[in-house]
Length: 155
Image: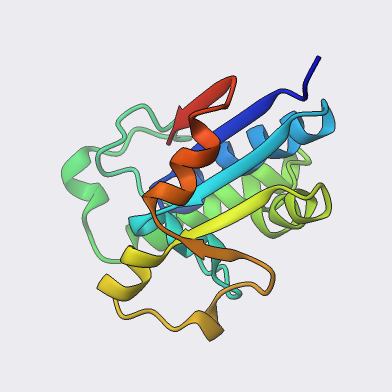
């Protein structure tokens, strides 16, 4: 039997949306899957050397809060920083690995991470700002792997 494959498309670049691709990829790799993540549009933020990501509750009304905050107040200056601090504190209290650790775990497990070259060019990003060892490619690069994968996830 051939090795199972997991293909993930990561499109979001916030702290909270950064966890799912790295948690699922590292878990699948530990279970023996061959894993590839294709980072496109805002998901490219997850490949930057400096992971200075924020969490935002705007557009995510399901975000649990220690106290109810009306959506209108969530748009006030400083709220995003406060919510990011609260999220990081909660994760540390619960022993959740930080995003950089999860990403490093994926690298150690040989998860193939591909930055969308078109998006890098579109947003005029500098490759020097990205992690060493990642690949750059287009949608065709991703489909080559995804077309043979057992599981394909869009995040």
